[in-house]
Length: 396
Image 1: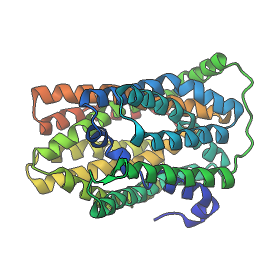
Image 2: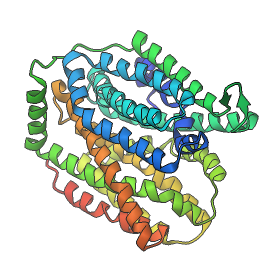
Image 3: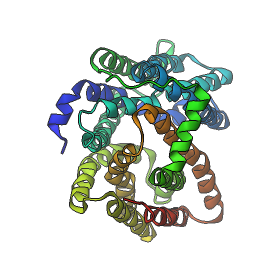
C-alpha cells in the first residue's frame, strides 16, 4: 500500500507526521469541548472565525519568511507555538482568552502551512517522487485518523467526559496528550529531518509576493489549478457543513459517528494508492483528473437514495474520495512552481482553501433554509461541473 523504500528514506519526517496528527481527537471534538467548558456557541463560532481570519491575513507574509530564512525554522515556530497553545486550552475560562488563542493559533499555523510541504518536496532526490510523497501523506492521514479515533474511544472507555481530576475535567487531558505528542513530533523533526539547501530569495517581501502572484497568473495551468481549487473548496466546505445534518436526518447519533470515524479512516486507507494506480494506467494528469472529478459528480446522485445504509456508504466514499485524486493533483501542481517561490505559492494555495472555508458554510447554511440536507448536498455538488470544464482547458 505504501512505498516502503520511500518511507524508509524519509522515516523521521513520517514518524513526526504520525505523532503530529495521530492524537488530535480533541481538536475534532473542539466545538463540544469548548461548550462543555462553558463557552457559548456564538463565542465558539467567533473563535473559529478569528482563527481563519488570522491565518488568511498572515499566510503570505509568514511563507515569505520561510523562503527567505529557511523552511525548517519556519515549521519549528509552528510546532513550538502549537505545543504552548494546546497546553493552555484547559486553563482558560474567559471569552477574551479563548479569542486571543484563536488569533495566535491562526497566526502561528501559517508558518508551517506552505513551508513544510516545500521543505519535503525540495528534499526529494527525484522529482518523480513528489507524487509518492503526496500519496504517502494521504495514506498516513488515514492511519492517524484511526489512531485519533481509537485514542478518543479508549480514553472515554476509562473516563467520564466530565469527571473531575484535580482542577481539571477528564477531557482536558486530551489536550495535554495532544501537546505531548506534538512535542515528540517537534523533537523528531528538529533532530532528524534535514533541510536541503535552496536558493533563498533576496527580494523584499512585497516584491517577492508580487513576483509569485505574477508567476501564478502567467503560468496557464497554474492559473487554472488555483481557479478550480477555489470552486472545489467552496463545494467541499459546503458539504463539510452539511454532512452532519444529513446523517442526523437519518437518526445517526454522535456516538455512532465517532465510532464510524475509525472505520471510515480504515476504509480510506487504500484510496491514494488506488488513485496512483489509475494514474499510471491513464498516464496523463488531464484525463486522470477529468475521470476523477466526473466520478465525484456522479457519486452525488447516491445521496438521493433514501436509507441509513446508503447514507453511511455515501459518507464513507465522499469523505475518502478526495484522497483518491488530490495527491496526484498536488504533485502536478508542484511541477509548475519554481523552488525559490515554493513556500509562498503553496501558502497562496492554502489561502484559497481558507476562502473556500469562508464561503462554503455560508452557502450550506443558506441551502438548509430553503431545502432539506439531502437536496442541499445534491445542489452544492453541482459546483463540480465548472471544475470539470476548467480542467478540460489544461495544456500539456
